[in-house]
Image (cartoon, rainbow, N blue to C red; front, side, top):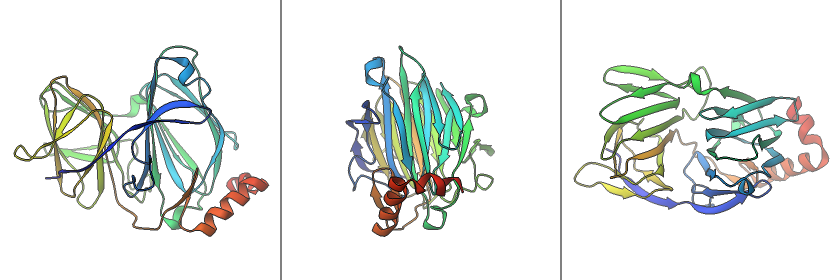
Length: 292
């Protein structure tokens, strides 16, 4: 049984052109969990908090996963790709050797809510061509399982009650070296869920609505709302919702165990590779290299 090892509270932050958000993983260099680099939650009913969006900016060396709960964002890049993300949609972007893109709200009022997760790439894949997978909400299976519990399976696979379920982003067809598992869970008040998690994978929980308890009944530990809970190794995790119920993300992936050198939107293995990325971007070679 996995247990709660560490709690990383989310802290207020801003990114892009001043979008207000909360950052848990990635809030500090030691607040990572290999291969996860960062988790941002953006959530506001006030358009002043998000209208400026995320104008054109570069990425190299990792993947970004954007999951929308509410609202409408548009992605456009320097290669001419364009996509719209609405409630329940996911974009899995492998920046690899480079992409310059923007993510801009397509609404002037109402709620904008969702997450962006950064997942590192192994050294051998950091300079591969960039690619995308846009996943509409209609393609993401929702498993109604146990009393008062549902599981939205975005990436990876699950075996529950001798049945195997597979998400739209899945290994080996997606060729994801980190073999990620990405679940969005909804629990009724006091509902309990026991889920398998691959042994050896790094794993954490982020409760974005309500408090939860994690671990076996004798040693369960509380995870407060809007905090990331890093889990110990094991084959399964037990989660119990508090009195108000809960909604949470469960993420797991195979660790890379490689050096991480980050400079803003560039994540490589050495300082020299970072300097090359910055030089490529400043000189205009970045876009040309990315397009090759």
